[in-house]
Image (tube, rainbow, N blue to C red; front, side, top):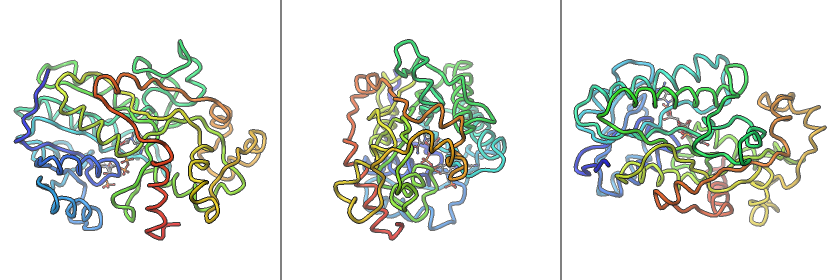
Amino acid sequence: MKNIDKTKPVLVTGATGYLAGWLVKRLLEDGLSVHAAVRDPEKEHKVHHLNGIASNSPGTIKYFKSDLLDEGSYAEAMEGCELVFHTASPFTSDFDNPQKELIEPAVKGTDNVLNQANKTVGVKRVVLTSSCAAIYTDAKDVHETPNNILTEDIWNTTASLDYQPYSYSKTLAEKKAWEINKDQNKWDLVTINPSLVMGPPLNPKATTSESFSLLKQLGDGTFKMGAPKIGIGLVDVRDVAEAHYQAGFTPSASGRYITSAHNTNFVELGEALEPKYGKTYPVPTKALPKWLLFLIGPYVNKSLSRKFIQNNVNIEWKADNSKIKEDLNLSFKPMQRTMEDSFQVLIENDII
Ligand code: NAP
């Protein structure tokens, strides 16, 4: 049971990120002093939204220059903190070298930040942003589980460097975190494992998250003929931020937390947008047949390999979110609201 002193600063790694932005906002609005570790604090376009929030909140923000790959670079940012939120990790499908661009920053970064927690006096809890990707790779994996449902007991055993390396990076990083945690008894580890995160970005012009790329594709005509009916989970970015906050400050929080609101599929995301935006934007409401995807998929998008289509299209996805609802008293926003609020930001910023 770890009580966190709210008068001490809290560290957020990757504070420029889509998800971290909402977490920083939550902390600042609660009056906390946030140590924001970012790659380049001088890049105004990456941090201006955080400065805006800070100037209207009771909390304060201080930036620290840190890189996941530079050993020791989180030392200064962590000084004085009892609570560390480690969110930084690359989330992109745009890579040439998965080892260098995904695995190394995810795993070495976790090693770097958590070993720093070992060295820094006073750290009591680390909340790690893991992912449902550390639990499964393909929707097909759901049906290999004992009750056809993903739970916190399950680990991803099917991702590799050659197949879905992002999922592999999250699996290896979370495993590394539990290993480091096991070898000490100074701080406890809680992991937040979100499914696909959607919802409005706080800094839409500079958001690099893969979530935002997928959202754009729902409105830019990529899927105007229909979308692959890929089984996925969905959760609102604001609820994921709240999950982190509760995982940090609830003394009894422990272990992994599946953070997923809706068992859904990619076509239903388009359907949620249809009533409000369907007349003006080419949002998908039809599922493309699997045979057609086999033919065109790999040419349309490099992520749509035949193996991926085989293992995900028209396959139901299901996860058990009862642990986080019970332990952290979390409730989730309806999917329609999440999708509409996200899409509105694209429109208002002339992104689609
Ligand atoms: P994002 O906006 O791209 O955030 C990634 C963050 O990681 C950025 O702040 C980025 O910094 C930082 N980062 C990347 N490489 C770094 C490095 N070498 N050194 C220091 N910082 C580095 O994506 P996001 O969606 O918010 O993802 C945040 C976390 O949530 C990640 O751990 C991701 O795996 C996890 N997650 C996301 C989803 C989702 O659907 N979005 C679902 C489950 C889990 P820069 O701004 O400098 O690039």
